[in-house]
Each structure stands twice: as structure tokens, then as C-alpha cells.
Image (cartoon, rainbow, N blue to C red; front, side, top):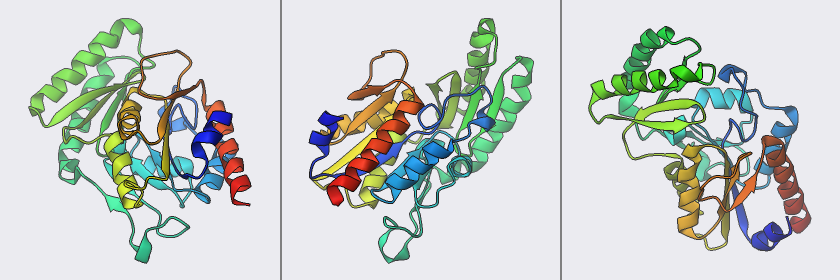
Length: 268
């Protein structure tokens, strides 16, 4: 924490957080990834002090429903559905609501893909489809490992029907089908920094915390900016563009609490 204090001294912080595996443990049933009261309180305190955003693969409505904090910026569907608060210390000037959907024209296509996958996945025991509006998640955490290849083939064959309009990314025991629009969590982070008028601010220190492969896009943005840093949440070491490492969500909450305390001390 001492090294962080040195980095943060005199800086304007902006906090960006993944949800699943970062603020809450990964669970077998994605619909039961509930946020703890301690986690919510820590994020709420930070959001009263610095701009704070959740950037998740979940659809916007789901992640808002899990987090239940109106003062945050949210980017659902891997950043394809962005919304900011209409009140609070970091709401946009003039009462303008931050709202952006870079793949809005894909709504109908994603519904079609979702329906197609819903028809096919029951053939594989334990496989589940999650509708995230601008992305479709095919979870295989509860599938017998001998059938994992079958899940991947099913997803790839479905996506192949739509030429190059779709792409597949990999998460933790999940295949994500997304519009092929050159947008990801890193682009969402950059967009939010622009909206917050922090993108060209030399005293801004953005921090992104995430656990998944899709979070690497955000880590890479901060690494290339040479301003701010990523924190990987993982029990196992792996190649990453993050600068620091935590092992589990409980450590994330502890870190956020310490950041909140540090801000309080320096502003007193």
C-alpha cells in the first residue's frame, strides 16, 4: 500500500471495476452472483470521493440490479451499453445523462443469436445461455469437461452463420458472442475518461481492477497510456498487462477500503 500512496500522491483518482470475480466470487449459477453489503459499502464510499465505474460483461440492467448504487457509471455488455449517474458529485455538467450504445444496430441480431443458441445448448448437459443484450454468454462451468469441445464447436458453428458480423471471446468457463465492432472494456474505459474530462489530464491516475481475459483490454489501455495501472485478480499467476496482483475479491474490497481511507486522510 505504501507504493500506492507514493503513486497516488497529488493525483486525481478514477476507479474502474469488473464485477464477477472482482467484487464478488465466481459462482456456479450466474444469477446468484450477489454483492455483499461490505463490498457495496466500500464501492459507495469510493463513488462519493472519486469517479467510479463498473465495466462488466453482464448486461447493464443485470449489473445495476446486482450493485444497486445510482451514483456509479456503468458499462454493461463489455462496454457496449454505457450509462452514468444523473446526480451526485460526478454526474455530467448541465444535468446531461451519460448514455452510449456503440452497437445499438445489433440488438435484433443478438436476439436472433440468443434464440438460436437457446435451441441448441440443451443438447449439452449443464450448458447455459445468458442474454446480456449486446452479447450472449454461453457458460460451461457446469458441463462435464469431456463435453467442453462440443460446447465450443456449437458456439463457433452458430456464429459462422453470420459472416464477420460477430466475434467470440473467451472468459472464465464462458464463450462470449459479441458484435464485431472493435469495442471492448478498454475502449469503454477510454470513453469514460473522455466523458469525465480526465483523458488528457496529467494528474489523473485511473485504476482498473479485473479478473478475466476480457479485462486485459482495459489493462492494456492503461499500460499504453503510461498513466494509471491495472490490478489482476487471480489465484494463479498468468501473463497480463496489469501492474499489480490480488488473489480474490475479499482482497479487492480491502484495497478499496484502504483507498477510501487514504483519500479521506489526504483531503482532511
